[in-house]
Length: 245
Length: 320
Ligand SMILES: Cc1cc2nc3c(=O)[nH]c(=O)nc-3n(C[C@H](O)[C@H](O)[C@H](O)COP(=O)(O)OP(=O)(O)OC[C@H]3O[C@@H](n4cnc5c(N)ncnc54)[C@H](O)[C@@H]3O)c2cc1C
Image 1 (tube, rainbow over the protein chains, first blue to last red):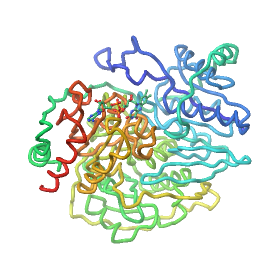
Image 2 (cartoon, each protein chain N blue to C red):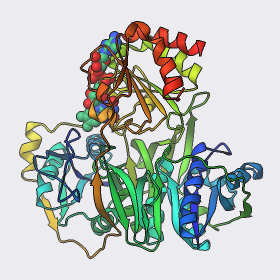
Image 3 (cartoon, protein in one colour):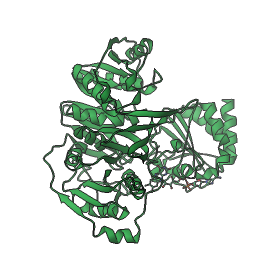
Image 4 (cartoon, rainbow over the protein chains, first blue to last red):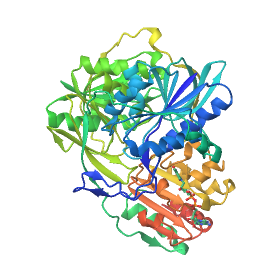
C-alpha cells in the first residue's frame, strides 16, 4: 500500500486575523505556519500504519510557493518518505484539486483533512476523488488495514459507522484518526534533510471562485454579569430578555 | 431552470435543517425568478415529502432506493448530479454537514460548478454571484464570487429562519439508474445516537470544560439538558481525558455548532474552543476566574463556582 497525505500550510490556530489592501487580502506578516491540524493527524496515522507494516510508502504533497517548504520538511521529519511541492499559489479548491490530481493517481490511499483551518473549504479531498474517479469516504475517524482490507470508522450526522471499501480511495479525515499529532524527534529532523522534496511545475487550471473581500465580526457588546448568589436571575434573563429559553 | 436542494432525512423523517435549506433555496429562487426542486434520497413516505412544499419546494424528486443507505459518496454524487442536470439546476444547495461536505465537492466537479462551502447568508449579488461564508474558523467572513454558470453551496445550519409558505409540492419518482457496482461502500456496523438530542441539531447546548473537575460532576449538566431538551457538549481536554465521549467535543478540531443558546461551564474560552461555538446566538459563561477569556465572547456570565451555580439554575428552570 502506498499512501499520499495532502498537507496544507496554514496559519497557527492562535494567529490574530488581520487583512491588508483594504480588506482584500489576509495579512501574512508575523504569521507562524503549521501543518493543518487534520492533515497532521492523517500523517500521524499513516506513520503508525507504516510502523505496523501495513503500508510501504508515505508521500506528502502540497500546492504552494516556496514558503511552504518548512512545513513539508516537518512532515518528512514526522515520518513521510518523500514530499512533493507543486509550485503554485493556491487559488481555490478547484485549482488545488486539479494540481493534486496530476501527482495522486498512483497511490492506493489518499488522505485529506476534513477542512483547512484557514479558508474552511472542506472541498479538496472530495474534488480530488471525483477528478480521479476514486471512491471516497468522509468524516473518517479511524483507519485500520487488516490483511490488505481497509476497515474504516466514520462519523455520520447522528452516529458512527464501521465500513470497508476497496482501493484506490480518498479518505477525508477528522478527529479520532490518530490520538495526538506526532512531534518530530531529533533523529527524524536530521533524516528529513536528506529525504527527497520534489518541486513540480503546476498544471494548467483555472479557479472557479475568487475571494472579493474580508470582514471581521462586529465587536460584541459587554457581557452582562449576574451574581453567583442570584444565579436564578440568569434563567429569568435568558427567558425574558434574550428569549432563548 | 431551477434551484436544487439536497435534503437529509433521519430514519425517514426530515431533519429541521432540511426545511431550513428549502426556505433558504426559496428565497434564492425568488431573486432569480426560478423555482425550488427538493431531492430526497432514501426511504421517506409521501406525507413526509409533502412537508417540503410547505417551506417553498415546488417539486420533490423522490429517489426511494435503500441502496443509498450506505451513504456511498460516489453513488450519492452521481444521483445528485443527474437530478441537477434533469432539472437544469443553476444553484445546488447542500447542508454543511458531514454528508453535505462529503458529496458537494464531487457534485461541483461533475457539474463544472463553482463551490462555496459554509455559506451563512443569502447571496448579496446575483450577477456576478457573490455570497458570504465564514473563514478562519469563525474569526472572519469573506465574500466569495463564483465564476461558473452553476453554483454549488453548502449552507451552515441555523443561519436562516424557517418560512412556512403553505404551499404544496408535486412529488415525482426519480431514478438515477445506477448499477449495483457503483455502491462500493460496505457498511458493517452502524451506531446511532438514540434517545438523546443530536448535538448538531440542538437549539440549546450545555457544555462543560476542565473546570467541571471530573466525570462524576456531570449529573447536574445532564439534568439541565433533560429539562431543556438540550444537547451536551464539552471542551477538548474533557474528551481527551475520557470524561465524556469524543462525539461531544466541540471546537476547531471537534464539532462546529451554532445553537440559539450555548452554556459554557468551567470552560476558559481558548480560541480553538471558540472557533466551534462562536456562531451561537447567545453564549452564557460560568467560570470562577473573572479574567477568563470566555467572558469577552459571552453575552451573559456568572463569576462563580460551577458546583454552586448549577443547582440554582436547575431550580430556576424548574420554576420557569
Ligand atoms: C491545534 C489545536 C486545536 C484545538 N482544538 C480544540 C477544540 O476543538 N476544542 C477545544 O475545546 N479545545 C481545543 N484546543 C485546546 C484549547 O487550546 C484549550 O486548551 C481548551 O479549549 C481548554 O479547555 P477548557 O476550557 O475545558 O480547560 P481550561 O483551559 O483548563 O479551563 C478550565 C476553566 O475552568 C475554570 N474553572 C475551574 N474550576 C472551576 C469551578 N469550580 N467553577 C467554575 N469554573 C472553574 C477555570 O477558571 C478555567 O477558566 C485545541 C488546541 C490546539 C493547539
